Image (tube, rainbow, N blue to C red; front, side):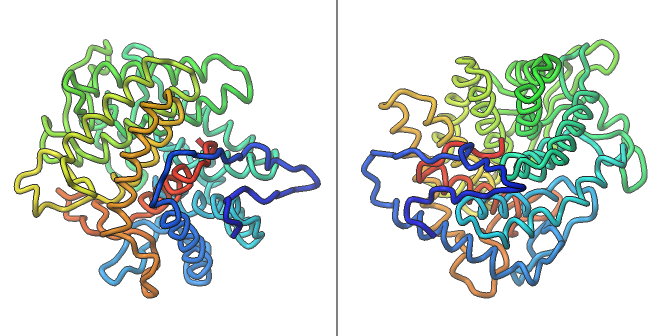
Length: 408
């Protein structure tokens, strides 16, 4: 790998798109820079080493021996392996990563072919599975697939409440949960708005922009609390759109602050600020990040919920740390130098915490990159490798080294 981590050119049918991805020089003195660059190199080698084991499967959650269990055909995390492969291609230009990433395309065709498989996570799935492919290769088939997914995401918008419905009332696996799902938004959806902003940029259609704007404004008003903590979910009356109450699904309690939800919001509002130039969303990312920084106190890795009892011994969530690190580096890129230095320092602290206590890239027996992820603590899933933790770990490392444009 080149030391400056610049993108090697990737071409498809003679069309180069490498100009989309640029790195900028970060001038702040940073004694940990070499450590992070070495960690990123190990991430790429971990991907290369596990490709013969993983094949066309997509990791879902780590097992006790640090091997993977795998996704079914419509899982929300199905794109994070592809996302990592596209990042590795960006950094190396090695066609082995191109081939492995593009071989996953049938998964995304399958989601488009099954209306029941489509929910608010289309943004996660198609930003990392197809927008990435389009930006790297100019293949128009994947552009069309991503636009089709963005159009399906539009169909989930509820104008009476100005929100995107999160989950489906009828599960793809059978059964219904209408009373639970209908009228509900969740913090995670902020990460899915990037697909709508990309589609607006590609087509000029204002409905993509307006839906993203409506949902972001509603999230800021109702999911972000006055003290800059956050609900995981919020429920609206399905007929009138009237706001009803904040709740949790994966956190400790309705009134607590689930750390991964806070991280989704930081990254999501920083994304929206990048896409729209809105100072309102930049300030939201700033306030959420400052609150998380204070709640972490001296911790290097966030506790799974900032209100969890016995926090010293409570499970940590490396995925929350990785998502938040990527988000605060994105925030820093949009701030004036003095404030930017603060957020880069917080990002460096978060990455140092992950490297100190969660890094698996030097463990030859591990198939993933980060230990101690908390998938769903109240359902019994904690202390796991998580593919989204691994993806955001790579993204955060790259942002810390000066890369500023990704697939979001």
